[in-house]
Image 1 (cartoon, one colour):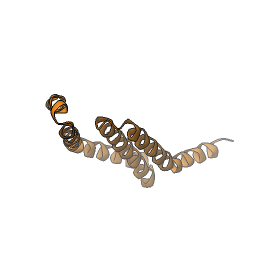
Image 2 (tube, helix red, strand yellow):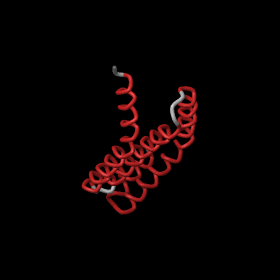
Image 3 (cartoon, one colour):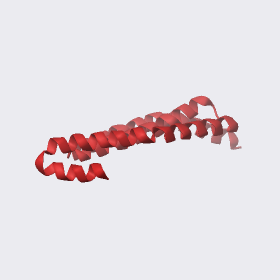
Image 4 (cartoon, one colour):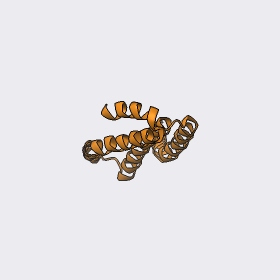
Length: 118
């Protein structure tokens, strides 16, 4: 909240400093939530091991989640820097990466469904 108020004040005087402040505050926010993300990953690992899911699928799902979060953060940072066009391109590239990572998981799921049908 403090960074947002400071950014508004700085934007009138020094727009470039406002962008730097916004990016730094966003990076600090991400660093602050890393311990919670680590707990989520640990809980997911335990859950997947209990369910007997193959580790490679868990790895893919964690990558998908990480890319999704990073893509959103990067796009919002671009928007904060008044680069809406770049933000759209970052989101598009992220979506393509997500589809590429999700494809093997979707393929395995589809083959499981097909094997269950008579």
